[in-house]
Image 1 (tube, rainbow, N blue to C red):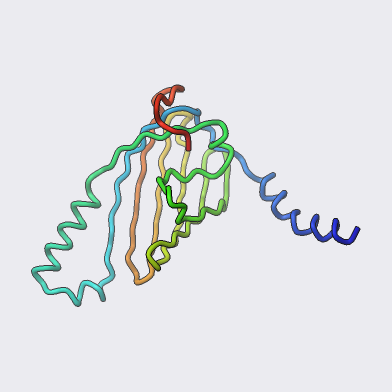
Image 2 (image 1 turned 60 degrees about the horizontal axis):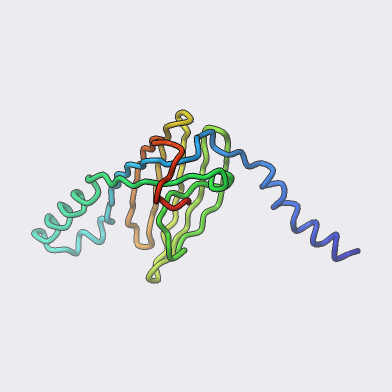
Length: 166
């Protein structure tokens, strides 16, 4: 009996958190996601780079961050029943923790670890309508490198074709 009470007490916060989850009010199916990002290296790191190399690096980073990337994503009823992540994290290097969820907005804390470095941040997804959405993500890596990403999403239709579900 004591075991049941202890287990029930430990599970109660998880059950309460699950009860608070409200899926985003968007349509399941194929979505097109246009992402832009900006990477900002810490001043202390840039100060140690020779001026000509620094200009070259800043130009390269601005070019990489300024070009939008367009991907297709398949959202199913199942994937909409949990926090969205829109990442291609095949190596499972990131952990996602739902902070808040409503029909119009989700906030998720993100922590990624790769090559001995940890990156933490927050992603916010807004359902602008059942067929459009916008997300922002702010991340900071050990050492002070910052990344800001914006994602605009539009619904393409109910059939995902050959795009695998999230």
